Length: 174
Image (cartoon, rainbow, N blue to C red; front, side):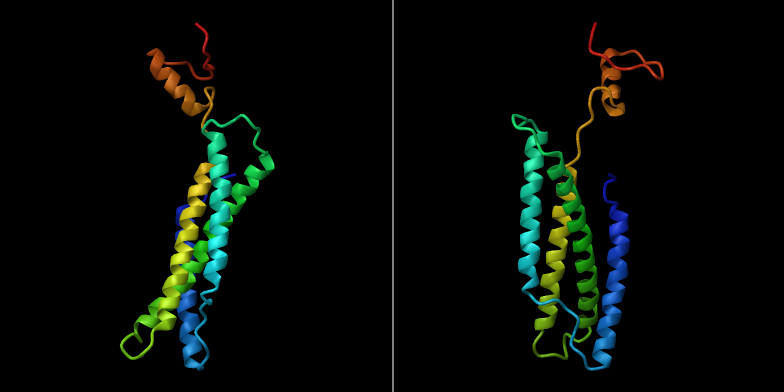
């Protein structure tokens, strides 16, 4: 499974920011409510972030040496998928609410109560937290290279001091 591309997350976020801005513009034109999620969504986002972080720390602990118990590979795969879903969902929420926030900024001086603006900032902050935790836990799920892998063999090559022929395998015996 490939790592999440931060550039793709940026493109999704910018696209949804434009969509959120346009949706808010249409909503205000037709006297509809601003399309922002309620603050109770922060509770759900917090639960998702905490569960993702707990599962990610469990995989990280196993990866860094606590291998007395075997880690369930299905649980590790689910943790990786959950981390990626958390990053993409956070990107969508951050982008959407950033677009709404940009539209609300032009009305900052006109309105007396800016509850929608603060609500939008809170939801965007929750989205940012989801992105950070998702990308972090995704890094936790990476397996370090073994001695026979390309990165590991480069270290062995440097220790021996002589270049290796292409196709030669690294070994520990001398």
